[in-house]
Each structure stands twice: as C-alpha cells, then as structure tokens.
Length: 222
Image (cartoon, rainbow, N blue to C red):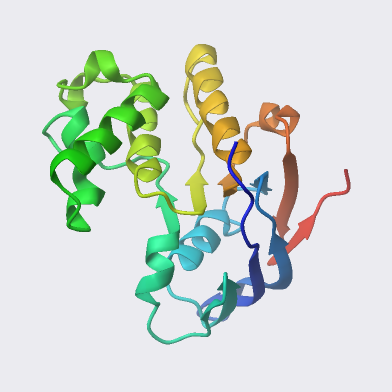
C-alpha cells in the first residue's frame, strides 16, 4: 500500500454556458486514499467538472491546488498535467495493440526502452491484460477497453486520477473487475474522483459520495 499524499483543494470553480451557470462551487477538499464518487443527474456538470480539473476544459473562474501547485485561471500548468490524469467514459484507443496504447503516454514523456517496457508489463499485469497484449482494440470487449484506459493512466503514476463513468454499460463481471482495480488505486494513496451513476460503487471501501446539483458540490453525510 502506498503512502497518502496531499489533498486536492478546490477553492472555486465557475462554469457558465451563456446565461446559464452550470457549476458554481468551492470549498471542496478531495483527500487521498479515498474513492470520491461524484453523483448527480445527467447534465449537471460532472464530466465538465472533471475536465476543468484536468485542464481539458476551461472555466469562467477556477482556483484549485495540489501539493503546492496552484491553478488560478489562465494557462493550465504543465506540472499539474503530470499530476492529474483524466480517463474518458469512452476512451479513444489507437488501432495498434493493447501494449502500444498503454505505452503511449510514457513515450510522449520521452520514457522508452526498458523503463517503458517494464512499466507497461506491470500495468498489464495489474489490469489482467497479459493475454491480449498484442490484440487490436476493435477486438476487445467494453470491459477490456476500460481496463486498457485505466492501465494507460496508471503507468503515468499521477497522484490524482479523474475517471468518468468507468462501469457504465458493462456487465456484472466487467463491473466487478473495474471496481477491484479502482480499490487498488485508492489503497495506494491516490486521489481518485469518479463521476458515476452506479449505486453499487457506494459500497466500496473508502467511498465518499459528493453530489453535484444546482451547480454546487456537497458531500453526502456518511
């Protein structure tokens, strides 16, 4: 089990679409070593919130920090991009192989050779993907594609993982496999924030539920 690191502190995030305010919230602290479940109706802004934290979307106002690194609008810091990783609900996978997809982010960071190969092998073992390492993504099941996306994020060793609807449209076996992987991420001391509609997620160890409604994020009482 890893050692818990610093919290992700969200002072304020505001996101508007024309005259509509989608998100206007703050005073939220996401502690390490927990599965933070972000729930709420469709269209309330869960995915948008995660994308703002990861620098994939912009906000009208934004102020948050992690381990002394702050973001207060303007250009999103490269240092935060290395520490906060977003996993899409429908991950885009290149038409190569499972191993090549998992290694993509490492190669973008100029990590290659034995170090890259070792990290990819460890990630495939973690995600249970050794048997499909050379398979093209179009031949994978939905659950396998989601595990590839998680493994691709895992190898980057980011302390914060933002994961959008990881169990959506999966059968019971695939959902259980994903939940097991999410639990290992939490146990390693990462900050794991998951947008989800899956009520079974709340029974996972270390689960903390946050509700996004009327633009505000509020922690649900235990």
